Image (tube, rainbow, N blue to C red; front, side, top):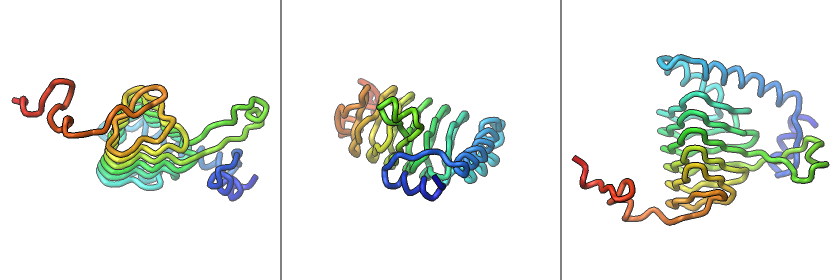
Length: 203
């Protein structure tokens, strides 16, 4: 399989296999990832430049805490003002589109790739990949796992530790394993910031 064939198969939703060209790209980006993860806290300009080299697109004022794990990098776009806490894992063999102003807790995994269930087929090494989209302003709680082909809507909130197997609509709070919608974000959330704590009681 050539790299062009691999790209075609991924974009068509077919099973695909690694190519030498693909593995060589992974090796290069993992060197950049290592530099990013080993940089000093004060080296913000260095990390910013490394992000530009690793990812397909990075907007202004994006912050990513170390450590970061990725496979491709070039398949990932991150909108301006997004904050990503430590421990993000990107299984990014295919497109990952993270919107503007998103918030990621620690230890989030975005996984675009899976393997066939049948053990004999799986042993042959074939994989499938489908894109992940995170809408503008979404908040992904710590330890959440988002599986291939998922779209998280704008301003949605994903509870900590959730395993997201289905799309989540805009302005929706969802949580659990598997992740399920709990309720819409509404006027209640303009009054209370946590449980019975009100914004207007702040001193």
